Image (cartoon, rainbow, N blue to C red; front, side, top):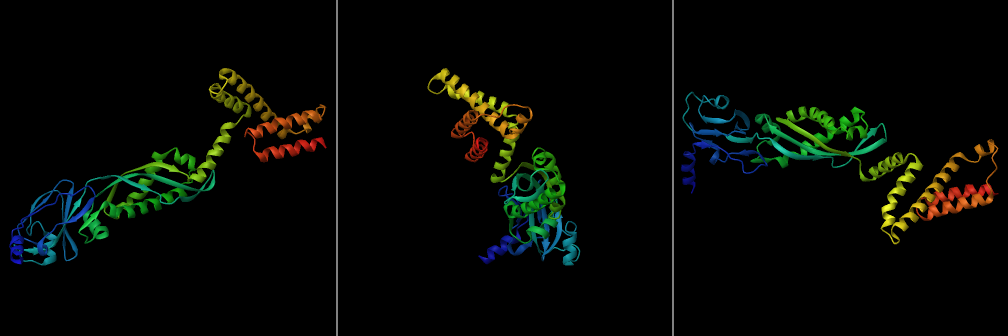
Length: 339
């Protein structure tokens, strides 16, 4: 068997590689004793590159094409070996093939929220997710800095390093830009362009070119998003009278579907308007107090009026419109006026 292996390797005269799947970045060509015949044919296909490595030292690199391996086509390797001109004996070397195709739809994201200082919300934690694509543009540099002597090197082997680089660059950009979270979330294209420009030098150090970079979303963690939603809701409420009208309009189709049909809708509308008026009146009185009325010479509220208002507020509490704490505070205020 050893004799057959020896005979076979003497007739290896074509060196080429086809990718097993889309995940492979680098593959070492399998050769018996790493021995190549003088005059062998090297075929490098489009979207590939080849690199000869002699005793651990990167030598000649080849772009797409067909080559006959001899001293003229292996100048660096010939120099490293100190061969005489027109050598005709086999030589030993590792041959690595590189996929230079664009690697698309690689996902990136923040495994943990990034803490930054936001001019609107103070200190917040942000998450970001997206896609990127890259290609190998310097096989020799990629071999010396990343893949080394491994027989195969894949995109999955590289993803962790690249994602770490992205998250680091993103954190720095967040901190330096001073852009508020809401403005950042509304301009993802510009944010992605700035991140791409910042990360391109880091990719170049590995012999890579960052071809595209997309930020799909910038968001807050769930607990902070709830706080933001509440704040947005309060801003949207604005005028309480308009808010009450809006709630009443939304209640009409619900009431119409309940027992009583349109009549029920009318009752619900009347009840909704009454509750809305009571709520608006309660908040208005709480804000204004009794001082303006006294200054205008108006008579003080009677005990019956205060009790009636208290009953209306209790009804709002029972329907969940007012919280127990809000009702208790208003109740204490009204009872204080009776004393």
